[in-house]
Image (cartoon, rainbow, N blue to C red; front, side):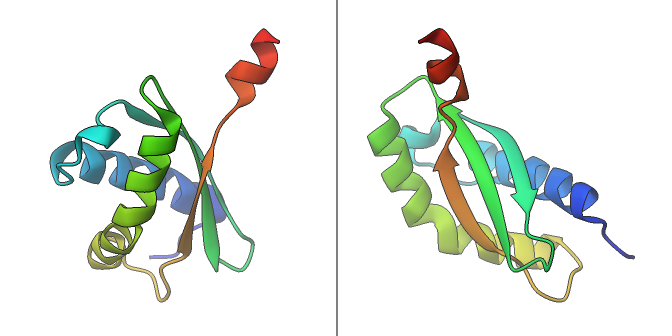
Length: 99
């Protein structure tokens, strides 16, 4: 099954959201939402934009800590040759819009 970039981005977003909700028990990630995923044209990395109602610094630390686990889970669930590196970025679009 061939994945297009958009389809792969959507699938990565859905699967990581599910993993965070059901398998990762870190309370710092309880209020994290994944807003957008952009996959590099060569599939080498996926930039994941996220937001939180909680403390952004604590959530960022927890996401970095969970990154290897999330990548292993994606490798087991996605049927692709190479699972992209995960690059989590705080989505500050809403904060910029309010200013």
